[in-house]
Length: 245
Image (cartoon, rainbow, N blue to C red; front, side, top):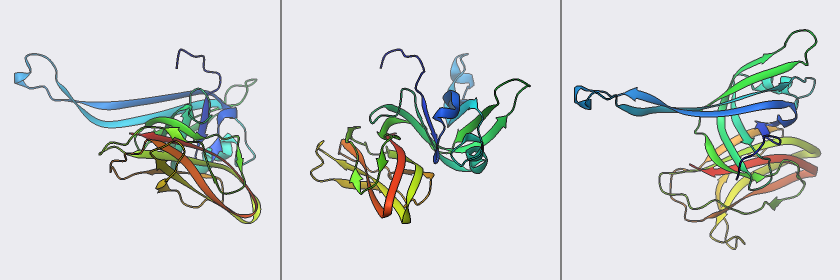
């Protein structure tokens, strides 16, 4: 990916797409530097890496009156922990994504007379910040059981984990529409013998979930999102991201 102008950043927080309400999104990560200097350090400061943390800060134009709008969503999520996924260049399958599970730590709104009503908020990580890829695009409705597009993420070494974030953005249908999403892997792009690596809890309403594997090595290199849908005339809009860390 070459230099770019930020024109199509996508932002998802739990079960809400904040893209249309956002004008600025910043992602930061840091490792605490712990002073380990001794008399044997030769006059130079020595440091060790301590705790790591990440933060997502966003702002934009305020809207309210529906659970999908930023004010309603911010109050519903305030003080809670859920997935955040940021796509710097869009949300097509394979696009770069940064995601984490984060605490909705603060929310602010309002400005002086005559200004477009703004909002701003911060989410602070409670899981690692993962650099991965979009695994499901938000603009594709799913109405029947199926599988998504395969991506080559690479093998997961021992001690590393496969991470997944799911954002169920809308739910429609009657007789209890439900979607159960899972992450599958295989050693070939055609998925002749898929293995389920993680399964999300069945979702019947908008919301978000995160999953990760247990640190066991995975030799498969191809991954995809799959889902089982039940109910009468069901329809789901969702976004998802996968990554290894």
